[in-house]
Length: 315
Ligand code: Q46
Ligand code: ZN
Ligand code: ZN
Image 1 (cartoon, helix red, strand yellow):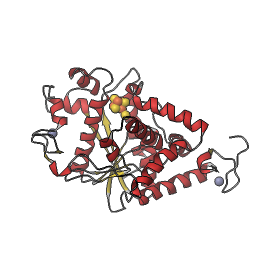
Image 2 (image 1 turned 30 degrees about the horizontal axis):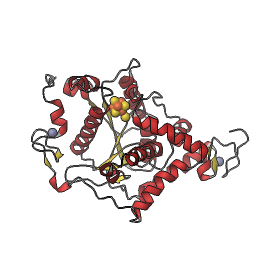
Image 3 (image 1 turned 30 degrees about the vertical axis):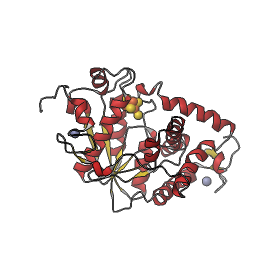
Image 4 (image 1 turned 135 degrees about the horizontal axis):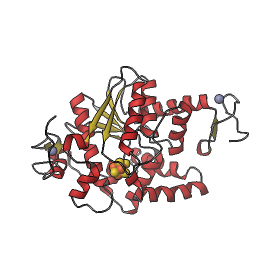
């Protein structure tokens, strides 16, 4: 960033955001990032200071930055760390748990809930996926377990909002994937706030307008200690492939990713793009095993996943 100056104070800039034509120093960048997050929260009417928010924290830059910003803005935000039992030769789950716990320790009075898949269910995510004879990456099983666990902890703890750290790069990649396959069911549900049915917490993505590098810059400038490694199973994921394509597009034409995603949202908001939801929320009923809402007959897909898997002895 040689020679770049902050447009607010003239100090040396730490970041230059070409799509915003904005270069900022550390102090003004932190201020800008927090104000932009607040604007996103308000624009999409995500939540207010009366809501109780549960932030899904993975120990990575996005989720810890999100948690930090919500706390600084004065929202009631506790965290949830889910131990998936993933090692990958680098102790991924243990290290990410340590980062999340260290962050939480810096905020007295703020709670970090911890759910452990191996301790609660007797199998780690990779073991469960193998048992189900899923070939390839365990991500579909993992996604289902994470969604179920987040909703369960939210309901048990009286949180009505579930916040995740998805950024613009994540959302643009998913959008591209959904469009290339015209997955209208997924497109209908792709929005920064999802009001759900009875017994399902509202889901929000307050960082959805930030590029990945902007979330990383916030964590770095703020001095948040996060896990740099991605989950070892992310290697080869389709979304990473789409992210690479979008990065090439972005290099050629700065702002391309931002335009792709933001114009999608704008078209929806203005009624120029109408995609009816295919899932019928009126079909929701409590799962006969766990009680969580499901549209599946009798028991939910999460409970079906564990059928035949060993149940650990109560401690
Ligand atoms: S944690 Fe789980 Fe991801 Fe790892 S196993 Fe796949 S889905 S990549 S975000
Ligand atoms: Zn400045
Ligand atoms: Zn169930």
